[in-house]
Amino acid sequence: MPLPVPKLSVVIPVYNEEQVLPSLFARLYPALDALGISYECVFVNDGSKDRSVALLRQQFQRRPRHTRVVLFHANFGQHSAVMAGLSYSRGDYVVTLDADLQNPPEEIGKLVSMLDQGYDYVGTIRQQRQDYWWRRFLSRGMNRLRERITPVRITDQGCMMRGYSRSVVTALNQTREINTFIPALASLYAMNPIEVPITHEERYAGQSKYSLYSLIRLNFDLITGFSVVPLQLFSMIGMAVSTLSALLVVYLFVRRIVMGPEAEGVFTLFGVVFFFIGLALFGIGLLGEYVGRIYAQVRERPRYIVEAVLEAHDDGALEAGDASPLLAAAAITDPGQAIAR
Image 1 (tube, rainbow, N blue to C red):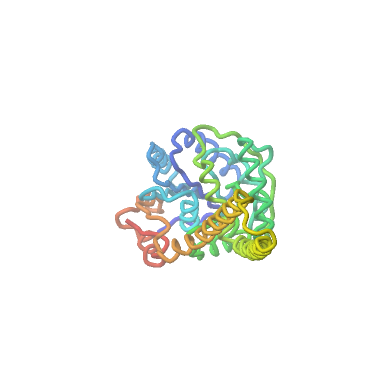
Image 2 (cartoon, helix red, strand yellow; image 1 turned 90 degrees about the vertical axis):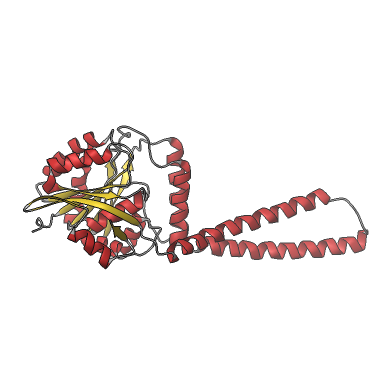
């Protein structure tokens, strides 16, 4: 018989965090115990290559009634890990949290308080961010761009610590998009959202898993996933360039009749041609972003492959991997989302 449904689920993706996990456990569970509500911590191991899995198993053995561990077969990315955590969570409230301790677990109570007041989505705004200057600069720039061309309104899009009601989580679990930006989707699904400030700390240990390239890719997914304005804007630029090109051809034709053949202006003409070529290549790349999203979607590959789930039942702890009813049900009811091994 399964354990009673908890009030709160905390979803934490884990990828090569062996240096951080002991400190995370030491702070997370006391912070949740202090809330005085039933809870579970859903850790999703995203194909870690260090000792993260061993540490998660040990923590499950120490606190089996409050711990669930989802083990991926390989690395599928942070957003896939969070989606898996949302799928396996059972709480009325769900809080997502990074494992790196940059968002203090002690702040979870603030999000739970807002959810208790009837808000169905609690966004967060990091105060005094402890990040490199270029990350803060890019974040501000992307926030401004996103607000201009998409319906998504998030003050701090890079903060993982957020709270969701069960209704919003259900809507997220029903989303079939391959490239998901969870906070943005949740803000659109929510009927009564709010944002609260939270503290931000330096990363406890290790290095960020998001490189500059990863951040650029993430923002490309965000823009192309929620707006066609870039395509529309480029179409208008193309029409303007075509008009100017036609006027340039007319001008050169008239000049040749009036002035006769001449060799002057060749380099200027080359410059104009190279500009048009660069513009065309940019447009092809932009179109490719949208086509690539369609390609990824129509393949209908699973977001992730679950190797095992560690969970507890009233009759004792059970490692679900070989014959778990939970995994079998997930594979049958939602074959496009997970494959149970």
